[in-house]
Length: 355
Image 1: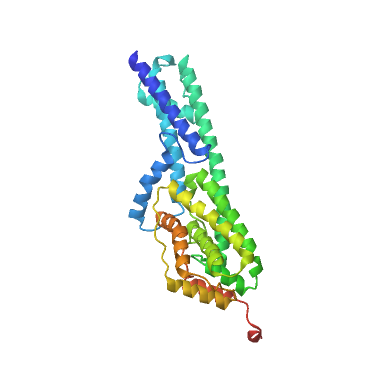
Image 2: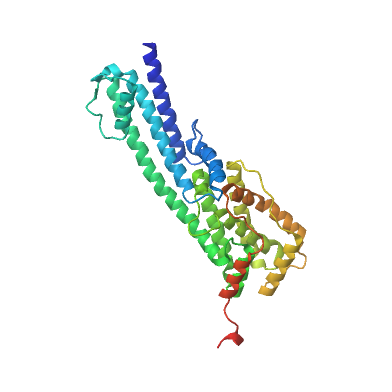
């Protein structure tokens, strides 16, 4: 009798813990607060193995694999939980369950809502079968709705990534954004760029902090990850704020920097990442100033390269940490050569060059 009560109670508790983990992960915003935290534990197991075996950045299949594996683990735990309860009540089934394997089969069939294979439950056994069916249907429904939500959030994030990388190359840089808009004669649109960048950063923070598995989804169609895009926006805002004498953009740049700073700091804290150094030198700042002068921007006479580098190190350290964690390119201060060639190719011809 005691063994039956213990087995039934154990199964009930396991079912409650599993359902709580599903609910916290899928429905409740923020990191899962349950005991299991299946997605986080799977990432902790799979990520080091992936980096060691694949010897390449996280692929587009990594995050979907973790997500599908999470739902598979939850379903298996529910099969075990209801299997324990069914086995404890095996005498209440007609015909009687011969063993634990048959109890697991019954629980799996009920969770998948495919029937009970001719077995009928009486009393509490009937409650277990009905409960298993309801739980299985609920988990599968949440899986479908969660996948739709994931795709929606990833699509919203990747639109911003694609816009920046199309404008500034891969990996994107704030300097390349400024040069591109100057080359196209569209510097007046930079205010909108800063505002849209702030809105995009807030959207990414809300979705990725609410559902941390989104962090590991790669941006499709670009080799640069989303952290590099955040880094480019931070550099863009810092350059406008500290190096340029363009007061009409300064307010929007400060707001963008603050939003991006909160984004990377909150996500780095969520993943327990230590800030990483951002590589840049005073000579790089001099190159940035010269390039922006050539592009036609007004420079601040009192600009302090050391202060700029200190501010960038503070802001970009979390970006570098996220990039290293995900195995994606970081956020360089200066555009790589291929981005420079793209900028030159896209610059409208001068009057003397037109035929």
